[in-house]
Image (cartoon, rainbow, N blue to C red; front, top):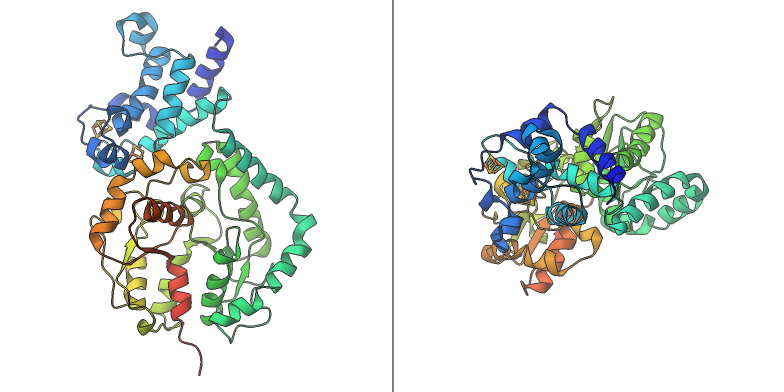
Length: 416
Ligand code: SF4
Ligand code: SF4
């Protein structure tokens, strides 16, 4: 790595050094309270897989370039120069962390390791060493949005073809069963790719008599997984613009934790409300707008709290209430809510396609699932659903993995 490349990375690092980040980098007392918090360390007990171990890589670079002792006497140790070995360490630290922020729950200073890893990811992008699969997915997502005008008609036709599938859940659905780009809608529902993320949600909203419309754009934000702030914001801005253009009062985000957290907490104040779809279901049940038949679901069922929806966004009681409405056979996982173990697939790990590390680093999650004795695990996040499905197969758990919305759609009490 030449002198200029190092200077460029130093300048890039400096752009991320706000007051909070300096506090995170200066304050760690190395008390170790976060060590046992990380599912990766709990499954693979090595120092490099602790929150503090990961953050130390970034902290040592910080010391080298921004602290007096590192500048004057780098040979005293405890510092890292930008070079190939350091970039490898950053890559390992950043992409073995799922960004679940469970460690933050236990840190007395509230140090947010996900944010520290965001610097690691930014430096990897700056050095052109980020995982190329995530770069490609983010670029494809942006290009797909830009080409939406060309594909609008075929998208509308594909939605019309789902009409009967929606009616199978809710026969009294209006025409069309999936309203698309409806200007006077109250709720803009933002799905993922694939009808599984549209059909059950459409049936539930139709059953509730919701005035809703479907978004042209998918919720998933590969820019966030990548740690690329510009691309992350380009992806979420398409949804913001659409919500403003249609004049909706609320944006309901499909079962996708990261997409929800980005839109709820990371885009600043907007003239519309942002909700997770499970919040809408909970509201419809509380208001008596939908009714569900408990006799439809008699298998012992547990719930996996997606980190970005539960402890990172505070949506913890709603899914439990929804599950208790859907079945009498609900058992909570231990620990749960803000203490729940991450599924192990966040932070872009599922999208990167790698399996071996994901399975090894989530052994503790598999054990937690097995201990419930449940036959079904429900969740409200596509990423968690994929990871739980892989864990189920890898560890032979013999469970069925379900989206919460699918359980509810199947249990809808149909009009007589
Ligand atoms: S954010 Fe999650 S995966 Fe990352 S260090 Fe903290 S506990 Fe571990
Ligand atoms: S709990 Fe907080 S202060 Fe203690 S080692 Fe972990 S990050 Fe540092």
